Image (cartoon, rainbow, N blue to C red):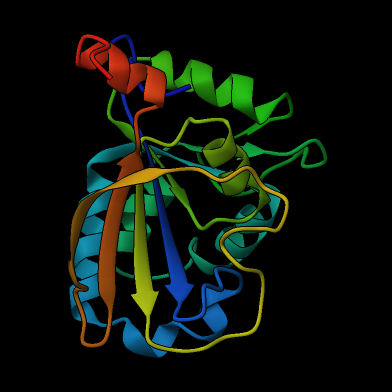
Length: 199
C-alpha cells in the first residue's frame, strides 16, 4: 500500500539513527548533538502536522517529559491531538490524547483518509516499524548522529526488505548531523504502468 490521490494527508516518520544503524534509545546518545538549529527545524515540521501518532512506549516517555517542559516546541506538542495505539492504556493523563486499541494498520489507514494536515510518528520502534511494513509511511526522514551506539537496529532481522527513493540529503541543522529523506519506491508493477509497460 502506498499513498494514493484519495489520501487527504501524508504520514511522516522521523527518526534518529547512529552511524552503525541503531535507532533505539536515542535519548541516551543523540542529545549532545541537538542544538538551536535542530530545535527550530523540529518545531517547523511539527507546526505543519495535525496530530502525533505513537505506541505505548513512546507515550510513556513523552508524557513524562513534555507536559511540564517550557518553550514553543513543548507548547505545540502538548496542544496538538495525540493518538496512542495500545491495548493496555486506559486513562491517558496527557491532554488531547486518544487511545486506540484496535489494529493500528487499519486505524492509521482511516486516519490518513480524513481531511487535514499531515500526521507524524517519531522513532522506529515496533509501532513505527509496523506502519513502514504496511506501506503507510509516505515520507521517512532519518537524522544520522555521529556516534556508535548499542541497541536495536533500524532493520530487524527477518523483516521483508523495502525499497525507498531518496528525496533529499544534506547536512543536518546542527554540526555533525546528516539528514536523509526518503519516500517509498514504486513497485515494479507501478513503474511499468507509468511507462506504458514497455519493459
